[in-house]
Image (cartoon, rainbow, N blue to C red; front, side):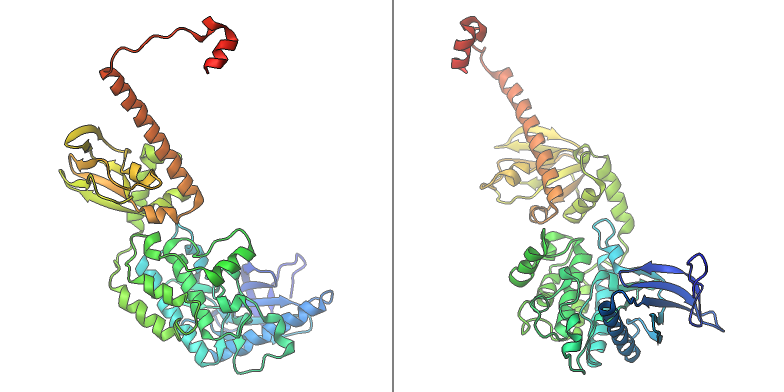
Length: 454
């Protein structure tokens, strides 16, 4: 099976083309079926005499994946073609998907357009419905286990940890209880309660949340804190995290992430139906180029000089671009809200009680005082555009839910801006003030007296 260099040339009758990836217990290869040009993926698992217990578990998982995979036939589930178990190894021959796993699109700077995300999750809902009707619960739905092909078709893979509802899970299978990836586990899964299809729909809801916002709904420094949040805390609103999202998504994700099974989606078809109802509210065009253009504009602004690229991408997700005509009021005295924003291009005038305070151009911030004040969000000034202006409006609620680094960066820059304006205001007041009293140098009194004065 192996060349002298350790390179695998053939697995059984299959000719190896190259390695596709390596996990903790298996290696996946791209291979060719003999007598045809059909490419397949082969998962190779090696058993070890040194760790007999682990080998028994691997055999069990392998048999689970083979048995379940062969009876699932759905366009959005990876097909199983063949399975072979030998003394020291076993391999599974599967449909080869030319594409990437969804974990590639979870980072804030690589998010897919909203309509594509909902389309992918819609199809996953129906695939999980098919699995459940065949007595199968996946139990490990996460980005790495969903592949996306060139036509945006999702393919759920890795049913090795699946729960076969048609079989008695006796003592021999207790080792697979509590499997799954903690961040995507349902409350009943982390508590080791009996599972049904609703646990997969919960995990799919977590994935939908992440693909839309670039973050997980529950974030903690350790596993204990994470489990506490999953069991006891509600997820934040996705439209609060990303103002570009239609509010109709909030109740859908809330229902998918319900801790009470009676209130959660009962099946994938219900979940899919609600997603299809809200999809018309989303723009169909690919927003990638627009995002890149906006990113480049922000990168050139002095306000964002200290922001890392990844932080700048998050700024794009928590803000709204507004193209505003001349003589339009952006902020009005007496209003109560904490929105603030940065002038990307154009000029605005800041006034109070009908008197001009200043005029501001590109890279300047307006509305920051109401945001920074801990208790009073009343507007003390009015801001009006002087010419057509491109304005980046920051959603304060979304900012408070964003990454710690982004919040800290904003607070630091805003505080610097406020101090600079306070200094400028002090100079202007000084020019209108009376001549100051000239005091003597403290050294004239000796060091002791100077300390007392201080």
